[in-house]
Amino acid sequence: MGTVYAVANQKGGVGKTTTTVNMGACVARTGAQTLVVDLDAQCNATVALGHPRDLEPSSYDCLAGEVSVAEAARPAGPDNLWLVPANEDLAGASVELPRIESFELRLRDSLGPVRERFGFTLLDCPPSLGPVAVNALVAADRVIVPVQAEYLALEGLVQFLDTLKLVQRELNPSLELAGILITMADDRTRLSQDVERELRENLPARVFKTVIPRSIRVAEAPSYGEPVTQHAPGSSGSRAYSDLAEEVTSLG
Image (cartoon, rainbow, N blue to C red; front, side, top):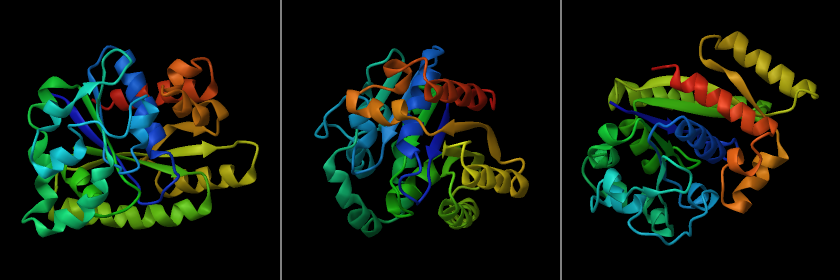
């Protein structure tokens, strides 16, 4: 039985898509069938894997109930990595979904046989706590929360964890926090060191051991339409995402 992970944080620019694409590629490299579901209307995960923004069926069609997530999956490029692309229709989902009864369950109901087909499914969430992100949290078994190594990101983390507790209480009691991932860290700065120390002191059992460094290779890989593990396999960012994949897969 596969596991569904939501990669979520309502703050933008913290590395959700980068984490989804690169960790997914690393897990797929181990031989596990891995699915990335792009739930962001900006289509960044889709583009980062070398695909256009107008593919159909898309994650919007899954939310609309027209196809299942498993049916919408297509090869993403790297071996064993699959993609449910986003397209710009997804921008309307935040308005349309609340008009539907039990809209929070749309993605969960659309998963279909995804857990039998894929060992790991990664839901790349939009930078908000709107209807699409709530759908992802309801559909997921576990959530990974990327947090940039800066103080404003810590404030957003507190808000997100409050929302997570609400979803667990009201909509998905089996949802677990897989871990908090520190991203874009720079060990040369006091700020990064202070943020990491504060997170590990206050949430000692919740923060992944792996820390993702700030890396130009990670940042430029999407412009080549491939994960950093293919673009620059020897880079610090590639090694960090490989470590993260190993840490996540060890959760069982």
